[in-house]
Length: 540
RNA sequence: GGCCCCAUCGUCCAGCCUGGUCCAGGACAUCGCCCUUUCAAGGCGGUAACACGGGUUCAAAUCCCGUUGGGGUCACCA
Image (cartoon, rainbow, N blue to C red; front, side):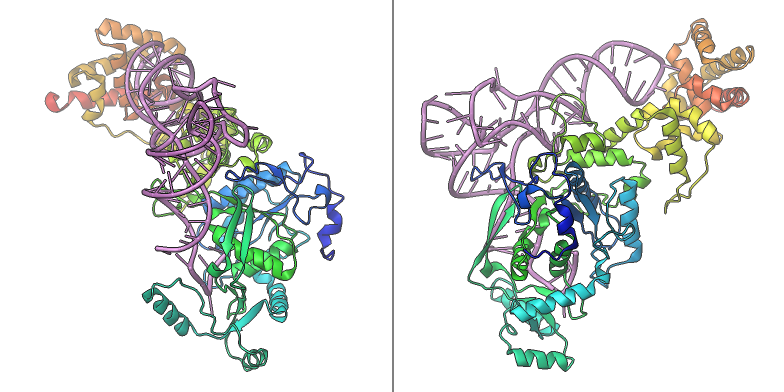
């Protein structure tokens, strides 16, 4: 193999992965080739660092699928002492945006899936933005043209559209009809030189077949008759994904391509490209696709897909990472907890054990996991997260500065109740604004308004007679009071709860009142008593 | 439609390669009970699945074939 790549000489000095092998195994359910050790052609003696990448295209919001595939790549790289790179595939000039690219990098950092090389961190194989690598693609296209593995196609959009219509009408399989396939070299050169627009297509020998080796699925066979003469170079002189991904993976020393299942049908084209260039192909491993509840590929119409949404909802990156990992393999030994941090996931991860069924993205389980992670945070850490979270400007909610000292006092009251950081307001609003009373709100206290008023006044009087507020001291006294008044303890507390907070589900009442302050608490009790003694008693 | 991938509780995963220990295990959700000033959290318990049909075998969730079902893909998007 060519020894020109800068990484190749360095590779042999890198430590072998923990397994002692290159980490690549093939599994085949149908052929019984389970876990057969496999050495990629470039894996000399299996002393080779794993180099993996994610190659998102910067269009639209940062996608949860990118995080999913990114996580598995990250785990695999870390586990094998290799490198994880980020490459931006911005060859679609009409759809790529710098803002989207920035959000991809921002969310990878938010998730703490650090990449060793990328547009913003650099690396030995840069640039890591395909729009800045056009010289490479031109050079390699020329190589293919010279070898006769590709050809210029001068067909117009209109002709192609017409061709497809006819194929459809005739119920023929769609695909390029080969009009320009055998254009004489001279004519091709001449028309190109004359400035005529063209694309470059792969020239596929329709007679053969290509086998794609997939770590999880074994051998997948494709007949060349089914493979279209794929466009490699667009008329705007930008490469298509197929060319760019192969050239870059080679130039960047990528050893394992872990990507989504939707790429399987185009993989034979990639394999053929590697062959045309005379390069060994990397190991392919196609990961399952995240699904909507109806099992279609996850989409933003049916499921939140933007990582920004998850962040704005107050999901912890630890929880999302944990959850995504669970959608594909089982870090658990089958007895007990499913809460794992990235270190534990890395230790338990096994690429060849990734499950193939497309997992339905279950927000409910994510929320549970988020609650688990929230509860595992120390009070200070939780307070920090809340302060930071509330300070962020989200599109639908301006950031707000909270008093860290106050938040630290509230956290013990709400931490085990919260599933998402965004619930801060609903748990604590009564600390910040006056309550708006409604008689229906008292219904759960199961007492008539005059009775409620009497109870609330008694509670206020009792608390007014002691210094300060102290839930340890006041609770027994209030229970006592309930007995003396002949009402249920629960009803008394519910009446107070609604009076002080305006709602029937709140953090622990007496502790909340301590934080609210005695003056405000008593004022609310008395205001509620007054409110309840007014108007039609039957209203409740 | 062609090609390709997939198939265990409602959902996520374990078991399948190396058939018997599986009247199938864990987690989320759900239901019930306990704890409890609400809501949570926590504890205990319950309901719930091997898609179907053939084979191979003494024995199949596990191996083979087929059917059905689901998904992906068929662009000068990735």
